[in-house]
Image (cartoon, rainbow, N blue to C red; front, side, top):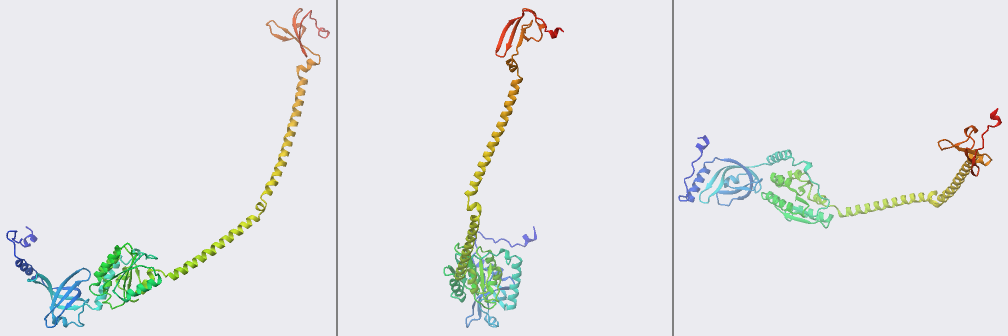
Length: 424
C-alpha cells in the first residue's frame, strides 16, 4: 500500500440507516478547520461594522479579481489602531486564523493583525500587472479595432448623475444631435465597481445596436481609480467584441484600462469628440467637397468643349463632304483613264491579231488554191489518198482527185510523161 493511501483518513462509517446528526458533521468540520494554521490574506474591504459598546468588529473581505468574499472578525481596538482609519474599498493584508462557528455553521477569519496597503505598494502591483498584460499582448496595437465613423448606437458605462456622464452626453449630442446613447450606471469606485462594470460591459457587448462602448469616469486618487486597473476588467475589455473607449480621469491619469481599450481618451469630454463627428464640420466639409466637385466638373466640361471646337475647326470636320467630292472627281478621272488605257490595249491587240490572221491566211493552202493552184491526190495500193508529187508515182488510167479553191473534181490519167525539165 502506498504512503498516500495509508495517510488518507478512513471513510466515515455512515449509511442511510446510520446517518450522522448535524451537530456531529458540524463538529467534525470545525475540528478540521481549527487545525489549520494562521495565514496572511490580501483583499479589499467592502463592509465595516464596528458598533459602539461592542468588543468585536466585523469586516467583509473581497477578492477584487473574482466574485469571492469572506467574513472577518477582529478586536475593535485593532481596527481603531489603524492610522489612517480603515475605510470601505481599501486594500489590506491581514493575518488571520480560519474559524468555524458551530451554532450557525459559518466560516470566518479571526484577524489579529491588519495592514493597509500603501500607495507605493498599489502602484508596484499595478506595474507588475501592466508588464504581465503587455507580455500577453493585450496592449498590442495590432489587436485594437477602429472606432466607427458614425456609430449606430453608443453604450456608456459611468456613474449615476456624474459629471462624466453629463460631459459625454452633452458634448456628443452637441456635435451630432441624432446620436443614440444607451447609458448603464454603475459604481465607479469601491469594491462593487469592477463586477458592476463587467456586467454592464457584457450587456452592451451583446446588444447588436451598440457599435462602440465608452467607459467614463472623472478624476480621482489612485485608490479611486484602482478598479480601472483591475485584471478581470482589463481581460473583459480585451475579450469584448465591440470596440471599447476608455475615458478615465484627467490627462495624467493612465489606468491599465487605457492601454487595453481600443481607444484611449484623456477625459470624458475628449471621448465625446472622438466617438462622433461634428455635424458643423462635416456639413462644411460636404460643402467644400461639393464646391470642389462643381469646379472640377466645370473645368472638365470647358476642356472638352475646347477640344470639340478644335476638332470642329479642322478641315476634315469643317467641310466633311468636300474631300469626298474631290476624291469622287479624282475617281472619275482615274476611271476614265483606265477605260481609255484598256480600250487602247484592246485595239492594239486586235490589230496585231488581225495582222497575224492575215499572214496566216496568206500562207495557208486555201489562199494558194484560190490563186489557181490545185492539189492532185491518188489512191495508193492500200486505199489511202496520197498527194501526187511526181508523174512517176502513177500510171495511165489512174483515178485522180483534184482539189481546187472552191471544191474537188475527179479525173482519170491518160498517160504520164515528165516535163521537159525532168527529161533533161
